[in-house]
Amino acid sequence: IEPAAKWRGDGPRPLVAVAPGTMGQGDQCAASMALEHPLRLNGQTVSVGYEDLSVYRLLLRGVAVVVTDYVGLGTTDRLHTYVNRVDGAHAVLDAVRAARSLDSSSVTSESRVGLFGYSQGGGATAAAAELQPSYAPDVELSGTYAGAPPADLTEVTEAIDGGDLAGALGWSLNGFLQTEPALRPIADRYVNEAGEKALKDLSTMCVGDALFAYGGRSSTGWTKTGQSLGDIIRAEPALQAFLAEQRIGSRKPGSPVRVATGTSDDLVPHAQARRLAVEWCDKGAKVTYVPVVLPGVGSGLLNHFAPLLADQGNAISWLTDRLSGRPAGSNCWSMPVQP
Image (tube, rainbow, N blue to C red; front, top):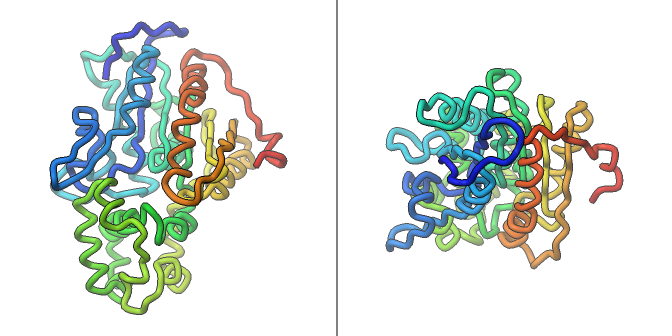
């Protein structure tokens, strides 16, 4: 997306790859669709293009933007591989490559590049930042914002089960069964008829649909044994090993990162996002860690969504500074006293 505004920073017009937060798994949920139709209520689906706000805020600063639909979202040949660490990272970095390859783009090979994402998008940009040195050495990054990243899916699974976004369990499982067929026998042992129906339903749903249809549901109703998905993970070493492979934080990002997380966020738990920042700090990465302190409102979606809005302006300012060539600091030294 080309901005009408002039870039007033140092160097040529920069590029930011925006990694969308959770949109759903139905093809109609793709962020590219949401750019044209920010709110869709057609009797069959409820989709909300809430990422449009960050896109337009970047455009107003004269920054060119590319938005990925991720792997499988908006296509007809496969399902979206929701919160898959490698797929998400590659989609973000490949989007940068795609944007830079366009002859009509104002972005040049000299343009600085940044990444911006929150929630699912924060996980994708966090994974991209640490995989960039090995996967995309041609995509030099000036800075990455990773808001509320789901870095540890085992903890996130426990948090969302029975909550507002319980439908995300189905999106995760659908995607993982597609990319890792060896997990299918485990699923067949545990998932009951109601669970199979839920997985099928959710594969066509957007986030709005899932909130209405599956918000508050417990995964215990989807299993033959009455165990929760968290219980099954603890009982199955193969699932533990697979989710360990999905952990973000095992590699050092090659460029500055800003990790922000709401201290009251219990949907994508604050503690595991903070731990990602600590792990990167321990590896010597240049990390700016921002705890977004807001009053908790019970539990659920608002605690997760409010920090996105409260911190977004500061996040964009931080990223714009990196795109202007201003060096990033690090507050890793403050981690022992930061909440």
